[in-house]
Length: 385
Image 1 (tube, rainbow, N blue to C red):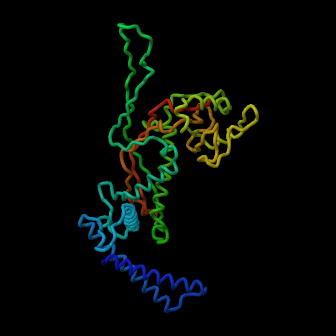
Image 2: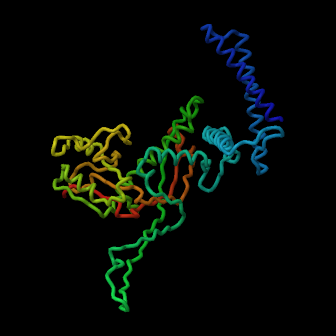
Image 3: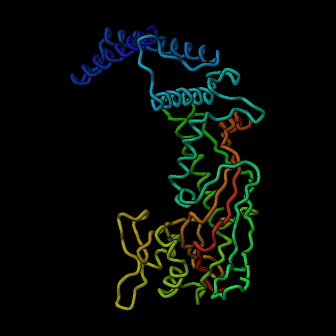
């Protein structure tokens, strides 16, 4: 019952401190000398209790086991255990960045050849944040595989299975389409975030939240650009074969948008979306049908507040504008785009490298690939050359 008793004592002290502070706030006055002394003593006692509990947990973990509830304490649910583990790992990561502990003693941090690896719970938060702010990646079909991953593809355009009238005792002609494969490998990418040491030294600053947000934003911008435009061997949507070409180099007509939408089979229409740049969306806002109705309608239920021909519009600064030869719009079911993660994200903290800039570097690595896995469900509108 030791841990339970310590937690109860800590909570009692915190409750007492809140009572003292709330009384002073209600009376709109400063703390008296006795109140200030009492709060200082409570603060020191709470810190000692917290430190004692942390040391107790550390000892259990060094023995290779998770802290177990004492006799009489209820077993933690899986969700409670996950939240507790995330809390501990977040505190450990923050302590590591603030250099409160040495690399070898960083609680819950694995130190390898590439430096300190981010705790799993924080890495999950980074990946989740990327999915939340990048609907293109979130809607793609994701594969978590190491090495080369092959997706079988049946090409009915080569030789299709034929069905025809037959005569009894006559032989049937056999035909079969060609089986090929789409290969997804893994290409290494890195993102670097610099953190001001002044902010790190400010105890009120959420250093872990800053690292997560900045790294997630950098990765979002990079991955979204690769998915839309391709980069090197990672092709993304750039190899879409179903292309509608606009008659003009800098303008799109309503007929061309309708042609683009109808170039996708009805089987893929339920989950289809438009992807375009903000400038292209502005141009489409001015398009009208034959009876003067705007094609692009405001819809508060749509992801970016607008629909085009009844379909949601995703906006990205990484998309090209209506310029000669560029792809201005993608349309289709993004599940037809395959994305593969070969390496889980890991983080390395660089202190000395940026010491002359009074900053700390945090570098993130990932291994990624993306290709179109089903050409039937995606289409592109390109501007005239």
